[in-house]
Image (tube, rainbow, N blue to C red; front, side, top):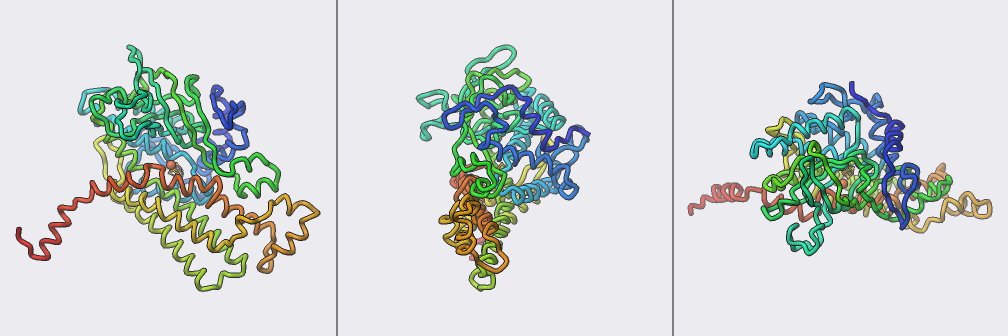
Length: 487
Ligand code: SF4
Ligand code: FE
C-alpha cells in the first residue's frame, strides 16, 4: 500500500516545503500554513485526505493504482473504466457537500489524466519519450499522495493575438532557453486554484497552437517550492472576516472553516530538468491536450452539485426557522432547486458512463456531455442562489454581527427581536444566515458562482465545443428523411 496521508500529515508536508514567495494584501506571507486567510483553503484540502480514511467514504475516496496495484487516493488515479469515472463525480459531489466550497484537488487529477493520454499520443506520432517520463511522475505523486496543481490558464494579454503575436512575449508561458539537461520557462498562470497548497505544478499549454507558437507548446512539472516561482494571492469577497478568529468572528465569516484559493503564479526563468518535460514544441498536440483536460474538468464540476445540496438544505432550514416551510410556494421553490441541481448531476454522470478508453489505456469522459454539464453549471447555481436568497429573506444582508449577540448590552434585544419559529435560537439563525450569505455573496460564492461561470473555461468555450461536436448534418438527415425531402 502506498502512503495515504491524513489531513494532519498533509499539513505537515506543506510545512516541510522550502519557504514559498507568497504575497497577500501587499505583504510577503511568512507563515503560509497558518495565515488566517489561507488556512480555510488548507482545511478544505485536508478533508480530501481525511475522507480517504473514513470508513463510509473509502469506496469513493480510494482506489487501486493501475500503475502499481497499490491503494491510492482517487485524486491521483488514472481512470480505468466508466465506473471509475462515475465514482470520481460522486466523490466530487460528496466533498462539495461536506465543505461547501472548492476543494482544489481535481485540477491536478484531470491534468494528470489528460497529460498521460497525450504524452502517449505524442510519442506515437513523433517518436519522443515523454510518456515513460510522465508515468514516473504519476507514480511519484501516487506513492507520496501529493497534490498537483493543474496549471493551464495563461494571462493571455491581448485576446485578439496568438501567443507568438503578443507585444510582450511573456503573456503565455514559454521556453526561453533549451539546455542539454532541460529547459528554462518564463511567464505566468492566472487564477491557479490551490496553487499555494499543492506540492507540484503540472503546466500545460492553454490553447491550440501553430508552428510559430512552438516555444509556447510546453508541458512540464515543477515543485511548488521552486525558488523562482512567485505567488500573488487572490483577494476574495469578505476574506478579511477570517482574520477575526474569535467564536463570534467565525460566525460572521460564514460559519464554516472551509474556503477555496486562487493565486497568480509567476515563473521567473524556472529551470525544468528533462525528466520533468512532457511536451516541448509539439504544437500539433497542444489542442488535444487542452480539449481533454477541459473535458475532464467540465465533468468534474459535479463538485457544485454537492454545494447545491448545501444550498437546498439551507433553504429548507431557513424556511423551517422562519415558520414558512409549509407554504406551497416555498415547497415549489425547493423542488425547483432540486430539479436544477440533479440536472447538473445527470449530465456529469452521463459524461462518465459514456467514457471511452484512450490509446494510453486510461478513460476519457464523453466530451459533448461534459461540456453540456459545465454549460449548465454556468447558469443553474445562479438560479439556485436566487431561490435560496428569496427563501432566506433580507435578514441575510442586514443581520447584526454575532459580536452584538455576545455583547451583554445588546444580546437581549437581539434574542427578543430576531426570534422566529419556536425552539429556534437566534444564534443558530445567525449561523444559517451567515452561511447563506457566504455561499451566495461571500468567499464561498467565489467557488459556487464565479468559478462556476469561468472555471474550466467560460460559457462561450463550452458553446464552441458543443457546436463543433453536434454533428448537425446527421440531425438534418433525420429531418429530411422524415419529411421525405429528396435534394
Ligand atoms: Fe474541484 Fe470543483 Fe474546485 Fe474545480 S471547482 S477544483 S472541480 S472542487
Ligand atoms: Fe475550478
